[in-house]
Length: 61
Image (cartoon, rainbow, N blue to C red; front, top):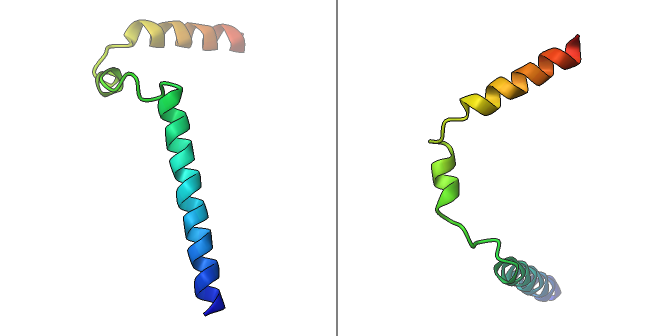
């Protein structure tokens, strides 16, 4: 019976901590832009990739 009470207390503590983390994220605008990340994979980053490759080549030399 004691183990059940300990597990219940631990589960409530975890639930409250997850709720607090979620509320903190909402308060700090972590969920503000939900549209852009879904489109990021569709954007063409060839220019950035070419610049990164040039930088890597210059670092090696």
